[in-house]
Image 1 (cartoon, rainbow, N blue to C red):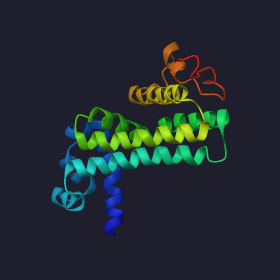
Image 2 (cartoon, one colour; image 1 turned 135 degrees about the horizontal axis):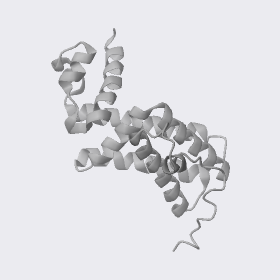
Image 3 (tube, rainbow, N blue to C red; image 1 turned 60 degrees about the vertical axis):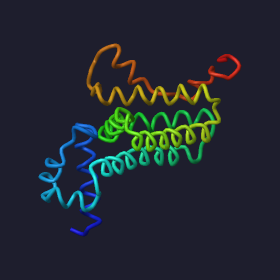
Image 4 (tube, helix red, strand yellow; image 1 turned 90 degrees about the vertical axis):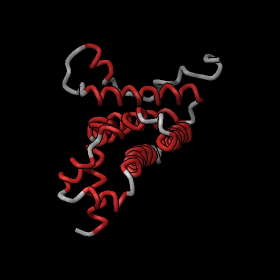
Length: 187
């Protein structure tokens, strides 16, 4: 295995560790054991546990933002809302680990370096949404709030839960859902 392949393997395994335990609860010993390497090798590649966490967080948010941009590239307005919402909803179902990493990142924002990285990526999500949809800030905020609800739903693992509230959370975003949210009626 090349050094780059090992690095990619470790980032994927570390995402699982951090998704489950967060910055402070994830075990580098467990990660090393799962990868079949020494902890010293992990630290040689990434420096510190926090640096590894930050790289995992960067990857999770970058993957999401790039996917939102790619999905909405040929759309505008309400159509962008629908395709970005569908992408976000599907990403919570297909890659629960990345969404849990994001939640762990939010929970670790008491650390300045983590907070700076997360703020940067929240800015990226805001910009991607605003640029593609042309929605006013209050509607962008509502769209992103819906996304945060999907993150929580992923953490709760409600995909197969057949209750009214779980079905309600799984409701899809459709074009025009946020049209009623305007600057004029929300000051």
